[in-house]
Image 1: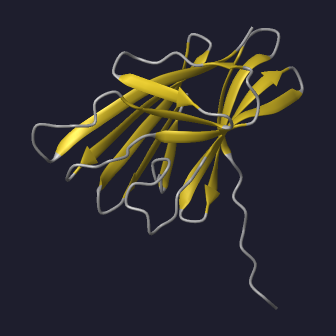
Image 2: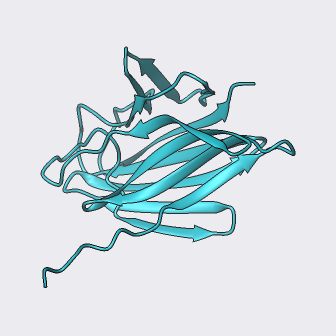
Image 3: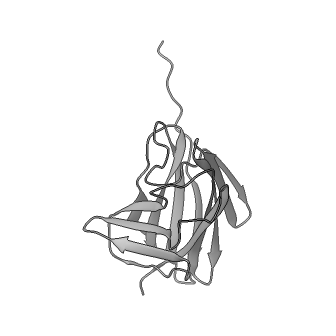
Length: 168
């Protein structure tokens, strides 16, 4: 018989109010990395809002950080991954009715591109960002990136932080 690839269950984290409304993120292994889907939840219905656009293993600076490892500790999910460019890490937590994403990359050298890119499935989300984080929305995509990507010297750590909540 042919060997089959086992599909691992998604690792999820959600922030719901007493009426069962809120936001959920699901991390699912996609090839050599974890992709993510962010859902708006209203009772029994979960509608995809954003899906990470993942790169390939030959990209040095992919569309989204190449997270290869995932660990959940209580209400926090930790991810990490690396390319020849640097080492990425992210924590995702539920805070004040939102999912908060803290992302960092320890860069070995200067890079033209760095950030997190999502395909937009629905516009039913609210996206507050920290001052050191910028975002751009195009027709079907959302890109979140560090406001400053230049360092005075390398290696250097670059960070971006954003929260996603369901519009009420």
